[in-house]
Image 1 (spheres, one colour):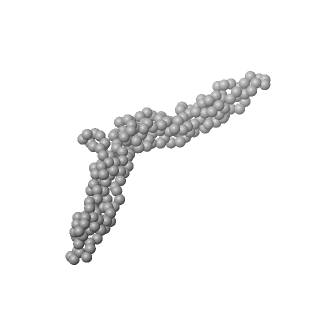
Image 2 (cartoon, helix red, strand yellow):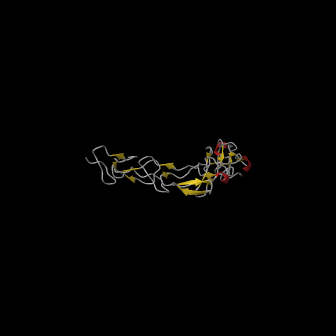
Image 3 (cartoon, one colour):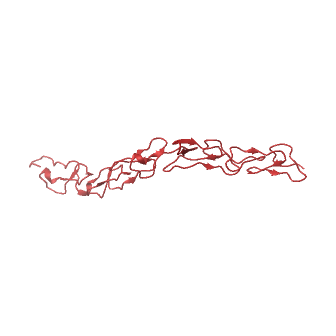
Length: 219
C-alpha cells in the first residue's frame, strides 16, 4: 500500500499471498486451476477444489468423471452416482434421478443408463415393455433398484393374490396350499390338515370327517 496510515488491503477471493510488507496487488498470486480461496488467504494450500472437482489442497484440481459427483468444496473424492441416478457431465455437483419407475445401475453416466423398472408387486414384461402385476401365487416385495427382478413363487402353505408384495401367512388348519397357489384350499370331507399344511391327509381307518375344512378326524 502507499505510505501513511492507509490500511493494508487483503488479497481478493481466489488469490493468496505469502509475502510480508507487500506493496503491490501483484504479490497476490492466483489460486491453481479449479480452486477457490477466501479473501485474505495467506497460503497456497488455502486454495481448495471447487465442488465437482477433486485434488489436494493447493494444487490444480481435476473434474469428477461422468457418473460421479462431488457436492462440496475441498480435497474430498468424487462419489459414484447411486442406483437409479446418473450424471452425464464431468464436474457434476449432483446426480440426476431417473424418471419414476425407471432404474439404473450405480455410476451410470448418461440418461441411457436408465431403464424401465417396476414397483413392488410388479414385474417388467419384455414383450409389452410395461410393468405387470405379479400373478396370483407369486410376489415381489421391493421396487427394482439397479436391475430388473422377477416375481417369486409363494412357498408351500402360503398364498397371494395378483400384484402382491408379500405372501399371506400360513393356511389355517383344515386347508392347504402348494407352492404358487392363489389361496388356501379347504380340505374335502374325509380328509384333514393342521395349520400350514401343503396337503390334506386321509382319515385313518376307523375315523372319519363328514365336513369340509376339518382339523382332525373323529373316531
